[in-house]
Length: 299
Image (cartoon, rainbow, N blue to C red; front, side, top):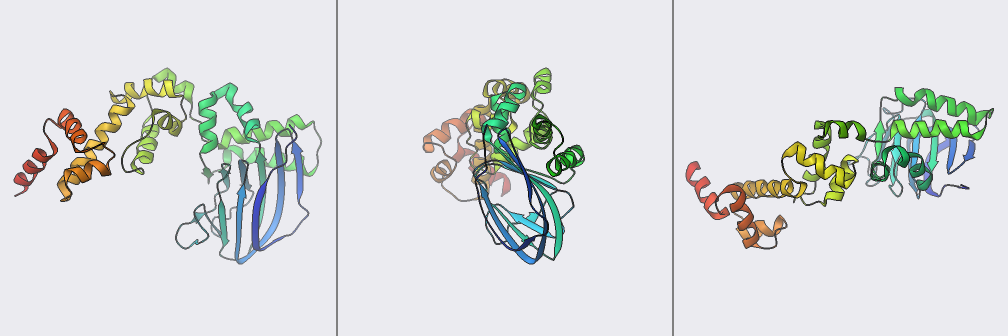
């Protein structure tokens, strides 16, 4: 696959200190950078393709990054040693003090990565992994691979398949790919998967996600996810979400003076009657009756 990456970028206060070295492979481009960043230096990067940044030295105390905006005083975090950035995700960087750094950039064609992963993990898990950013501080698992690849970029000595296999191993070691076959053997979601799902769905506020979206969060196929989710929780994904929405409605009923109709609208129920019906099925009484009893118990 003849591929060259496409990326918009702008830097200030960063200068290259050695000739940039790069190699083009089947659906992948690898680039080695040696540079110096001044205090207050900044950068902006937006690529049309997924990419990986691997730093050979720890820059976390010097570099802050954000995917939201260039105001690094509000929304930022330290730069990790290895970072996977999905296609179309912007990155802003800022340097606190002058420092030198060396890093490897891997630009990947999405179809090439899918071709590599799908045969082993399936299309759903591969697609989900490509959508999830990864930031890794402990790079022991891929450090040796990155150094071997850097050596091959500097002084090519083997067939391109060697470098491509190193890149594939780095991708597999860095991307967030759940061990789906292990989960199938157990027939249940791990606590880590449940925590990840709950954290994701909590951020939505109204607990409304499709089964396909929920499956993608934990990297499983939709059909398998629906099966193991019920084995894990005793409910279907949609029943579980409905119960979560009712729990949230109880919180709003008890802690606010919002009308039931407003709570229903806020949580995505079609109307007050819909919330009342579901609430009675799960709690055993109407929202209004539950609120009155709560207030009586507290008085």
